[in-house]
Length: 477
Image 1 (cartoon, rainbow, N blue to C red):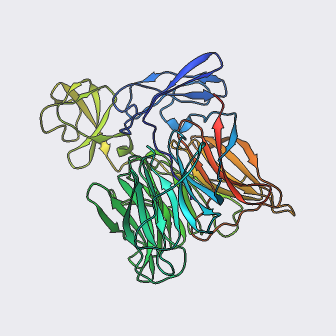
Image 2: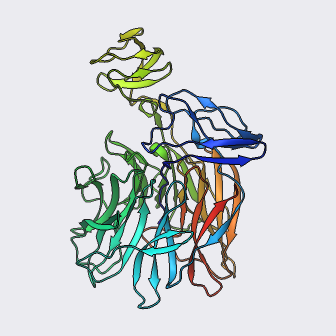
Image 3: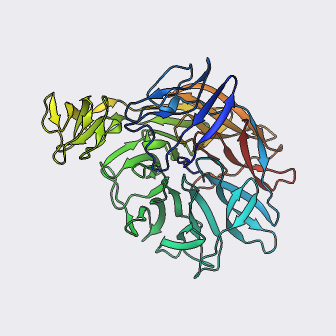
């Protein structure tokens, strides 16, 4: 089960061609927000880097020009798979990856007693996560926060039910559990925001699959009811969450959906086709997923962009630059036209222009929910059966498993690259042994994860003996 990447709390310097480029990141998930940022970009026309001072604007492009979305930055090409030492385990699935690619999570079967256990995975090897009290069955790790500090997953008593768990600082904590006595291996904690403060998952509750959100700050779990046309009786799975914790992906009535519970905005992505969302990019702008009936196609989805996507709530006594946008006065959006520092209270109001706020001057833009651009869904296929298993943090790459439907059933790992929803290229990262077509469970696909700007990929592949092994694609420096 793939994890959405987060944002790395470090800087890295990479030399490529004739230039040296700093990859700058921010542990508070506020890249280039009201201040300049320098990020990596490799375009078809060569390497590009530069500074921008626009709200949420980052320099990135395929052709070396400046654009306003990191979604156009190209993940580094070139690299190789590093096979993880899985001594003591077999059939190891790699399910999630931190933003910098240094820490992964998953699960494997212990060779000593054939028990499945949740694992922390790095290129140096694997570490078994703490075993929860109160159960005697298997454990699985499905997701990891972008900062690599929080791992989430599930555990099962000896015969019935499922429970959601969080592993952090060596301690395992139960979050919630199913209420039905089912023997199926279904449900659990699936994904975490970058800082691990929002965790999403699902369980069977009174015969209905229910998606939930766990809030670390309040230590509360809320089983959610989606807005119309869905209801409390709808079968729902929450499978992924954006880095800021605002957007949730999964499926409802077996249809792929993304949802912002704060603003009550819901998108049915596939127009009534069966499927599910496998990953969400930063701020929920891009989503990857699959159609579950024939697996012939995957989809890449760019959701509707609203005025609030480029805005944050107004803050008193804060400096703002020209072009910064804020929300204030009952969900109105304002753009800074004269830089300065805001007043100690109040903020811009009304629908006019030239609104004075301390030494800042604002113009009214529109309502936060006004549409800037409409949603676009792109179906794609890289082979006979294409499964989109993970998406990078900025949505510029989707990691896919492609299985031949011929006699060999070979499985390949591809990276599908896009810019602004437009297909750019695909890279074949690796091919498993012949005859290694991977079975896909009913609840969610397993076997791939993507990092953020670092370009690492984690996959589950097959050894010559057809045991599943964990491998990590490390990009060339």
